[in-house]
Length: 360
Image 1 (cartoon, helix red, strand yellow):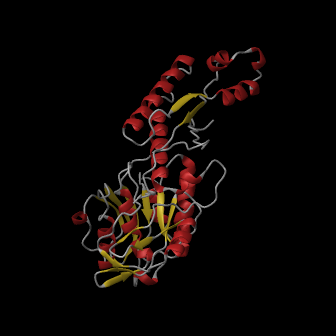
Image 2 (cartoon, helix red, strand yellow):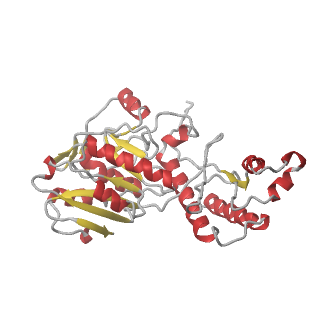
């Protein structure tokens, strides 16, 4: 029979459906000539001073954040011989460790190449099939997934140094992890950056539509052009909203919270009666109301109920003559160890476009 399963499927009907994970934790896999193993740090001064200078800077960039700093950095260092810039080992050991941690955003080494980025992408997509919600910031990888941010800006100048996209992924991860869920990271300034590889408006629009997370220079400062994921293909339960990091974060958060709460509080602890199903419905509705009050979900749009279609299909499969039952009888019917629910929510987006007509 296996473990009791939670199959909370959030599909977008006219808007979207949901998900949740704890915000603010960045996972980081490093390659270092001296340091190896796992570390969790909450500030720059916690880091192992034996890390290479480039790794120290990579860690520092993650802690720059945005409105807030990341809550913590979960680091796994892989020891390499020779120059890290010339070594591209498998990241499996680091990924295996990250599978035991609750992280929001994962980045590879500051030298991440396409092979390593693809390895991380594959791991992320597999993990998300298991009711976990990690996402990754990867350099120049067109993943076509809401769980991957495709960071593609090069020639990033900070002081006397110039970085390519792979070396700046930690900065982007920290920035997104430090963005409150009630706002987006669109137009977030990177005050330490003096210049970047610049694009004209048409090229920036094309890049964003292509699922690229890019930086822009507005003539005064460098900032995030738009907080988008790498998702391009619409369909199969995903609509345009899954292209926005803010929306995906909220959906991830809700999915994680509901899955873990149901697992910890309900599974195996209640008889599967109609009354106990109603208790679960009430608890989930209360959770949605809290999300509405926090400004994450739109007020008055959340609902959760017994999924009549799924429950009817189950009863038919078990040989029950549902044609002689009304809807309430179907709701109250014995479904053995299964609970069929469906929910509808609307995540509040951030203001990102303003049209202003001035009459004179």
